Image (cartoon, rainbow over all chains, first blue to last red; front, side):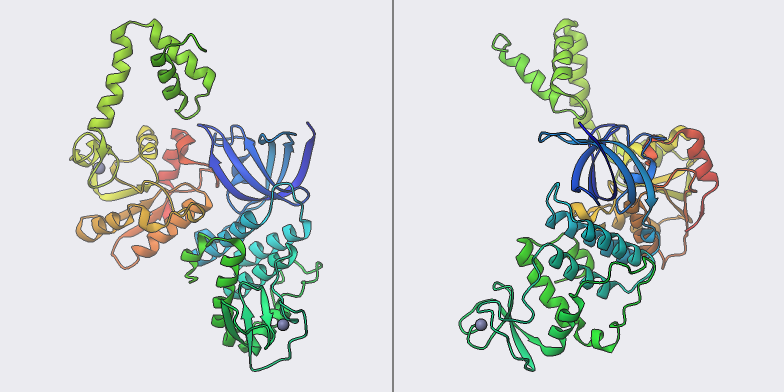
Length: 257
Length: 199
Ligand SMILES: [Zn+2]
Ligand SMILES: [Zn+2]
């Protein structure tokens, strides 16, 4: 039973007993873990506010070998999420980000880069960054990290390059753009404008890891974005529901249809 | 456990369903029930039956009540111009032990918890708005837990009440962010009440 240390983001907490929580944590070094925090619900517990949702905390846990829960022995708050005191839509957007992380990652499957992307995104949302484009950026980032990014250049069916046209066919079930011959007879195909597709292409490129946490300026957030925002949102809603096999809880709270 | 009779197994099973009671404790409780006199054991059964038959939510504030209205709502000495909004009945009990508050309450019966699919509509917020609309309330004290979900719930309520002429205040943060009201001691709660600030 080794003691492991990592930075972690709190994805879920469930009351386990009068005094304890079961916390689902997305750790930087070990991926998602589920750990029992004994005494965490008591006042002056060693955990204080380190186990509140969306908190970034430094945790120490005893890793159990079998299927049983890990045991959280320490959690020190590094950064709390404050926007739920100021703006509900920011709170909902941040919860949506961690809902995606929880739905899409597996226990003990480390994704340190995705962890840092998640922390950066939540931090930017908390600091007042525009919500819709940051949510989309994150969706594309998590899809890319976990290998679910749709095909945006070559045909998702025959892998041949698809020439740019004013409107492009995008197969939700096929997982990306379709060439003229492959789109025939396919179901769940949406027509996407070229500017919308170009935005998806450029925003799904990885962001340099050196980016400062407080720097949320993203040059693309101009008219180019606002013109296609509705179209891209509609496509992403369908694509994500299909990829996840379910509708995220936060869709209703964010007004995603 | 082949030698245990069917009714003993049943009582163990029922005890084991209680929060925080494992199999071992459930067995210990069952043996206790077997050992004590019939009247003592049946007093527990009666108490459980009574609480389920007689206790309901107060029609005004959703605190636990044995009639349509709870003891607090029926008490004419309570200040009718203040409503303290809490998540759970147990928070009312906790605030009452502080002795620092003499107004009325409103129990939300939860908090906005989107990851569990719980939105504002599943809480008693509409009734609170009605009380503000039709009553004599001048101050709403938001005493949801100082967690991200509790804060979000408080913010939602203050948005809903913005159009009404009530003062909205919030408990001071003597209580550590992320902790829960239920476990705060009475001095801290009294301080939080007296130091409450405008939302
Ligand atoms: Zn093709
Ligand atoms: Zn009442």
